[in-house]
Length: 378
Ligand code: FAD
Ligand code: A2P
Image 1 (cartoon, rainbow, N blue to C red):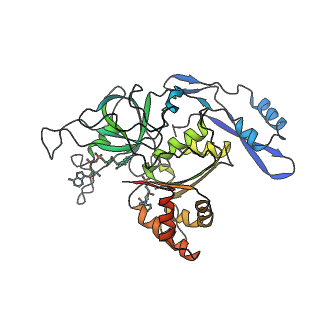
Image 2 (cartoon, rainbow, N blue to C red; image 1 turned 90 degrees about the vertical axis):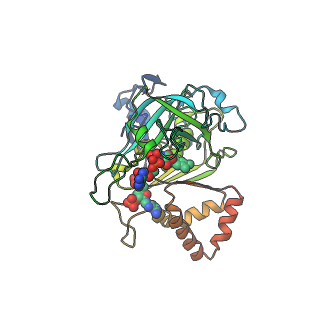
């Protein structure tokens, strides 16, 4: 899909007698281009020369190879200076008028419904940290209170603080268009479809958008330990904050944030056409195989072991021993997306805890006490 910053080809490099080949990515593109801005130029070597160069490196240890994956320069680095996250710089009574940069459909033709990636230019005036949300006030009147504006709708920010153009000027949202279908006719009824998500998905470059925030502290990435483990569980647009985290960990060159831990993403969507930002994530898998894991649950394409829909909690169950071990060692776990996933996930975790002879209630209260448990569902 459109949201990979890089084009890439994978090259397998044999390492000594190890039969598992070491995959390394090299860049096909000579530069990354976002909104007409070119960033750090990459290898311009021909593929033959590239292969030779790569095999020359075969004694180089993995961590050095990983360190050599080019990252994107970001600015302004003053965005790292604050000790506390920005909060509610703009409120519903006095929102900031931002400008839409672009709106792009993120999903393929067989995805049910539509999800859009929306880039908003805030001119550097509404800074935020990864994991925070913006409020959006759609244009028009609140039908429940005529003469007053619509209520604010919250959207998790899907970019890092530097935005998709790496200059601190934009924020990106990942928005599902809320459609209403008449239960009798089965036809879409635009008069009842979601006000704000339709406004955002229909917006055009240059349109104005009223934003509030940033808000939220629960999903901030704890950065005190750069070697921490982060387990991320997303359904649908719940991927937004995790895209931001992962770009910060693996795509951007931030001198004061050098991630050396493990990020493990579980993403539940309807089918393979509904996967969000998949190319970006697959690139991290190739470039940082020791630091990134990525598992997907395709509810309408795959079956769980009982023959039902494959949900994200089924994947959690599959890897439960590892997940519990990581949590016992201080891993952070984050949930974002459908509110409906939480009871199923809690049931799964409770079942696993019982099989291990542990009390889930005690474990959960300990995780909350240690600030390892982060939930943002809607
Ligand atoms: P609304 O106009 O508010 O309508 C809500 C729903 O009711 C719609 O499904 C609509 O079709 C239905 N409806 C409307 N009228 C009728 C009627 N007469 N009869 C029956 N049904 C009706 N969403 C995202 O897409 N991405 C995100 O990253 C995201 N992050 C969020 C983060 C937080 C912290 C929270 C709280 C929410 C988040 N949301 C996110 C959800 C978002 O805030 C909105 O709730 C969502 O976009 C729907 O808003 P809307 O204005 O489009 O729909
Ligand atoms: P489904 O709609 O097939 O029941 P998307 O935005 O692509 O629809 O992703 C949301 C994903 O979350 C879908 O795969 C959806 O499955 C799934 N989902 C729906 N309800 C739950 C639930 N209770 N627990 C976990 N996943 C769920």
